[in-house]
Length: 321
Image (cartoon, one colour):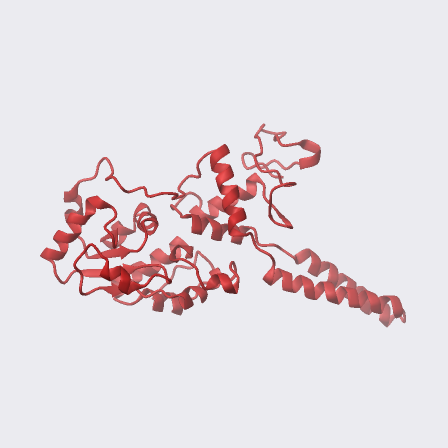
């Protein structure tokens, strides 16, 4: 185990659950707590997952993003199996060249099987299950501390202490983004996307409540104001529009479908085929989505087309245009 506080390494069985260097008390027991049958969970790995989701404490993130990071960090490595099998195959080839055949032919067969299994497992290895991961997250938050920047419940129901309605009119509003979930609104607003894009961000049902009047006034005074719809692929846009608190008739659906999400390499590496069919919008890494949204709003193109044309390999890929 590696101590997340001082990075000291020690053995669980020999040294116990208290760091010998700084006295940090380990919470997860790698001998008992397993993300998969072969991947243990320890404090350092758990905190590495949090750091990945928040980009080293830079962004707020949702439970879906945290789970996606868990899939990324906990991906099983089968490099050891592959190396061993290559050594066996090489030794077998040398033996055959030297005239020793029977046992080495058997060794080559074993090596080949291990090699193929290692390759398959490397790319299609077992991954942490959502229920297992959520249980560990709840366990940590109940017994240790809340996870910083994790959005667990609506956080914007009340205006911030220093909030002034005039501030919105001062920086100007170039459009309104309507989301299907409160969690999506919190995710975007807490990460300051509204200030980066000069937009008002609410749900179609009017969360947060204190922005409803402003949104209505903006549309009344600017009937041609851009209104955008941003939602999970499985949510029907027509239903959102029909039940929207705003009287909108001209709205642009930013157009993210399941095929687009499934096409992102960063997600294909983390999720199985059947899972890719039902991924929510906030599975996309924030840096990727915010860069794509900023580009879309500035250039009048659909989000799905931008993401589809830039099927990023990693969650640090944020170049568009």
